[in-house]
Image (cartoon, rainbow, N blue to C red; front, top):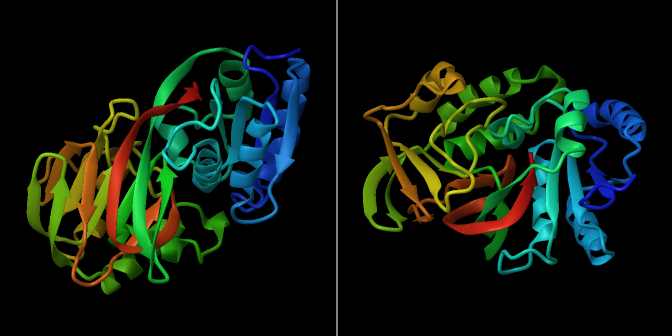
Length: 308
């Protein structure tokens, strides 16, 4: 049976979540077969392959694309669905997400962090969708300016270092790897005085961490940006302006989204943000370390449609 959006193309990273995708795929395929839903599986073989697969599927006529894995898989798939200007490479593309593993913060914003059987019923066989904003980030890597798109959250500073350190730890430890990495990153943090340039203002602040949020969650379930709306054409921008231990000490409240309001967290709604500290700071997006500052962020207004 064909879905109204066409054949469902599952782009799966078999190594995501310490092999969680490998465990998920047989059940996912069984359920899709029970619903007699036409689908094809495309397994990635390395970094960047999901981007290539997404682009080739669409060029071959596919329009219904599911990223199966964590935030990194979603990140790569989205970058394959957009051209250099942030516009879809074809009309009528529908993005779906099947979370597998310990990450999946993007999925949490939409309530898509559910068991696979519920996702198949609610999310892969129905027709409900919503428009989705995408972020564009420029940064420096190996001395050159580069750029990419992101759908969830980008960070500058402490949080990017947490991501870098967490990537080196075993995935099976789950959230603990973020807590271990957070403590280590605090010791190495380098708060700086920066000019944060936003759409309608410039803030001169001391900053240890900058969050540029399209989605609400990061770090394995921390609700860092509870006021972020992924379809409003704006980022929820948060600058942590306290001491270097501020973000770590707020971690328990971050998991509950109870860290706001806070006199040491400056918050804005803006379609753009840029920062160029005197000493380069790490930049990450969607859980992937990209490079260093100077960095700029711009919202691309609703170029994609998300299956919900």
